[in-house]
Image 1: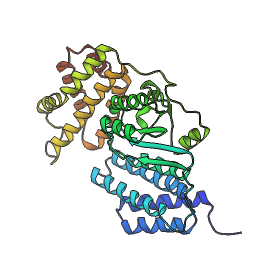
Image 2: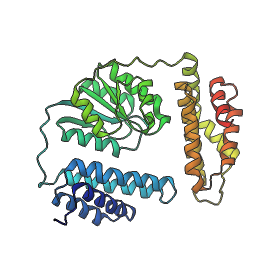
Image 3: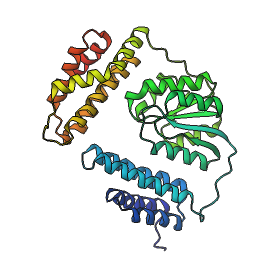
Image 4: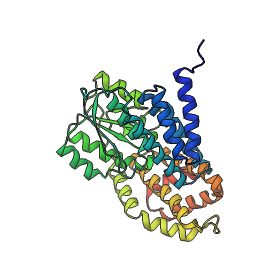
Length: 341
């Protein structure tokens, strides 16, 4: 019997080592592991999906638990990007399947700064014969519109991780639909089964890169299969007012609340970030007429807040102050009262 591990065992071992190297910000080891994967015959797709993706999920968990900070998370992502580029560019690997399936644009919606997952999807699609244009993080809707007008693909794939950005997903979906381009959606913002992708009018939701490859290979996507989402006029008006007044609301709330840990050197920045998330999620909830969007944001903030000295009482106080400030916004007030109750 051979002592060599099978491919699944090998990629699992590599992913554990890769994750540890990311945590230590050990660039040399990250590069060495990428080269080792190539030498051992790990396919580029397996490296992306079985080594890098699981390691990055653990990096996200480490940030959520407070074990690492934002800078460390960004450093880890940059190292993962380098490893992906190294493996995809390695001369030893098999040649890429020539682009025969068509053209697809992959983009993160406006305000979505987490681009690695979308990049992995783009790279996997490229490996399966798609001609991919990857637009990266935070693509403002008007820039996306210009791109689709001047360089129209056959499919538009949108990535979004935070439900607070769903109104911007809707704008991007409408941009694709108005150009007659089918729209795929993916990312945690759409829920575990993708219901919110359909809510904002996307033609299809894909849970991950293999799902996208399989669905697109079937050739069944077409634009307009999902009814377009049209916000209630009253919800649209409240959303517009909440969005235009968000900075003032966050400023006033921060001034009134103070910080749960005033000794923290970045207390004002952290407080503003937390309150901005609540304000954006509230606006998204109103826009979609879905109070669960805001409730999930509150629960998520409570979870990441515990290791950051952000107490449940402090969050409750913030919600009560928001409700008092927004009592003339009936839909927002209803969402806030549901969250407090």
